Image 1 (cartoon, helix red, strand yellow):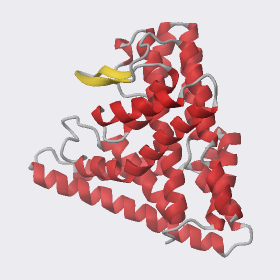
Image 2 (cartoon, rainbow, N blue to C red):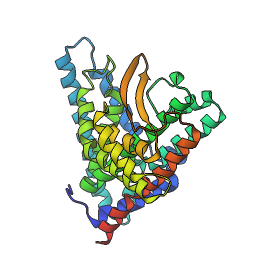
Image 3 (spheres, rainbow, N blue to C red):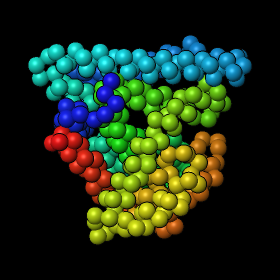
Image 4 (cartoon, rainbow, N blue to C red):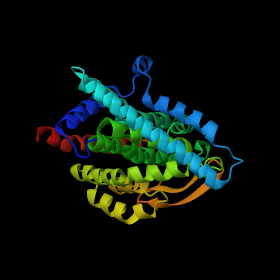
Length: 323
């Protein structure tokens, strides 16, 4: 266990960032090496089917969900530690560790997924709805063109933290065990951490633990978006900072508002607001006070700023490596 960043972990992360940027998640790699998140998802499905008994009382369901959540997080950390120890004994093992870390980063995948929404929306509203349905949990059929564009940008902002900044943070702090545990917790939250009747109690610990491990990375991610907006003439870093400080604490998520508000302020948009998730309408406050009527060109503006924010974490990692 590291508890502090080292030159070795920085070197591995720099290569992992480069591999993620160059390759993303190529189909051929998943045929050679099963994706860890897919394996995690299968374990979560098996555990949920065996432990989530709707006839049990709420307290029992919370305890069972905690057992699954903590058990899988510890298992992931232990496997990550074992792999790191084995790879340290192999000449060039750090290259394989960088490849594993790259598989658990989602920088390129996020960019390509949001870009696909922009392209689909340019082809038509139905195509845009279908594309954004792969990114968000809300009902895509309830979205007009502006709603599709805002949903894509909100996913871009939120997953900038979950898919890139937080994995980098936990790897720098705790190495491969920290990264593996983080991905387990984040996957648990995405699968059982929502407030549907089936998971209201069973997924409560997963949701709270995900909030905890993302608390600092989310605020770092918001700050990085502010910094990125300050570096380019077509975005407004000051407005990003003001929107983040003003609006993020009002978001229903303890973490997501920091990135969403920063992105909205930087580009003069308004994001979040009332949204429909299946049968539920969520009355969220708006992040930012700019335009709500967005389109494909605005998604592309968000992607341009995202590329700057994507590159920024490499600078401190490089300094750690050189120190």
